[in-house]
Length: 76
Image (tube, rainbow, N blue to C red):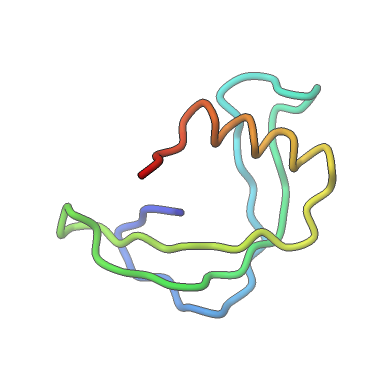
Protein backbone atom coordinates (compact mmCIF):
# COMPACT_ATOMS: atom_id res chain seq x y z
CA UNK A 1 0.00 0.00 0.00
CA UNK A 2 1.17 3.51 -0.82
CA UNK A 3 0.00 6.65 0.99
CA UNK A 4 -0.19 9.82 -1.13
CA UNK A 5 -1.67 13.31 -1.10
CA UNK A 6 -3.58 12.69 -4.35
CA UNK A 7 -5.64 9.68 -5.47
CA UNK A 8 -3.86 7.32 -7.86
CA UNK A 9 -5.72 5.91 -10.86
CA UNK A 10 -6.62 2.25 -10.54
CA UNK A 11 -5.58 -0.50 -12.97
CA UNK A 12 -2.50 1.45 -14.01
CA UNK A 13 0.97 -0.11 -14.21
CA UNK A 14 3.77 1.89 -12.62
CA UNK A 15 7.53 1.49 -12.69
CA UNK A 16 8.52 2.05 -9.06
CA UNK A 17 11.66 2.36 -7.00
CA UNK A 18 11.83 1.66 -3.27
CA UNK A 19 14.75 2.88 -1.16
CA UNK A 20 15.39 0.22 1.48
CA UNK A 21 15.81 1.23 5.14
CA UNK A 22 19.06 -0.77 5.23
CA UNK A 23 21.09 -2.89 2.84
CA UNK A 24 19.14 -6.13 2.32
CA UNK A 25 20.18 -9.09 0.18
CA UNK A 26 23.03 -6.92 -1.12
CA UNK A 27 20.58 -4.24 -2.34
CA UNK A 28 19.94 -0.63 -1.35
CA UNK A 29 16.93 -0.20 -3.67
CA UNK A 30 14.31 -2.28 -5.42
CA UNK A 31 13.08 -1.46 -8.92
CA UNK A 32 9.82 -3.15 -9.93
CA UNK A 33 6.54 -2.86 -11.81
CA UNK A 34 3.27 -2.76 -9.88
CA UNK A 35 -0.38 -2.35 -10.82
CA UNK A 36 -2.67 -0.13 -8.76
CA UNK A 37 -5.77 -2.10 -7.76
CA UNK A 38 -7.75 0.20 -5.46
CA UNK A 39 -7.64 3.50 -3.61
CA UNK A 40 -9.54 5.04 -0.71
CA UNK A 41 -9.28 7.93 1.71
CA UNK A 42 -6.84 7.44 4.55
CA UNK A 43 -7.90 7.90 8.19
CA UNK A 44 -6.14 11.26 7.80
CA UNK A 45 -8.45 13.03 5.30
CA UNK A 46 -5.45 14.78 3.69
CA UNK A 47 -4.18 11.49 2.23
CA UNK A 48 -5.21 8.52 0.06
CA UNK A 49 -4.23 4.86 0.36
CA UNK A 50 -3.60 2.85 -2.80
CA UNK A 51 -3.20 -0.92 -2.96
CA UNK A 52 -0.76 -2.38 -5.49
CA UNK A 53 0.00 -5.78 -6.96
CA UNK A 54 3.67 -6.51 -7.64
CA UNK A 55 4.29 -7.74 -11.19
CA UNK A 56 7.06 -10.20 -12.19
CA UNK A 57 8.93 -10.17 -8.88
CA UNK A 58 12.32 -11.87 -8.92
CA UNK A 59 13.21 -14.35 -6.16
CA UNK A 60 15.75 -11.87 -4.72
CA UNK A 61 13.15 -9.09 -4.61
CA UNK A 62 10.58 -11.46 -3.10
CA UNK A 63 12.93 -12.28 -0.20
CA UNK A 64 13.46 -8.56 0.49
CA UNK A 65 9.71 -7.79 0.28
CA UNK A 66 8.90 -10.61 2.70
CA UNK A 67 11.48 -9.29 5.16
CA UNK A 68 10.08 -5.74 4.89
CA UNK A 69 6.55 -7.01 5.54
CA UNK A 70 7.75 -8.96 8.58
CA UNK A 71 9.66 -5.94 9.94
CA UNK A 72 7.26 -3.09 9.09
CA UNK A 73 3.94 -4.54 7.91
CA UNK A 74 0.60 -4.08 9.63
CA UNK A 75 -1.36 -7.23 10.37
CA UNK A 76 -5.01 -7.61 11.34
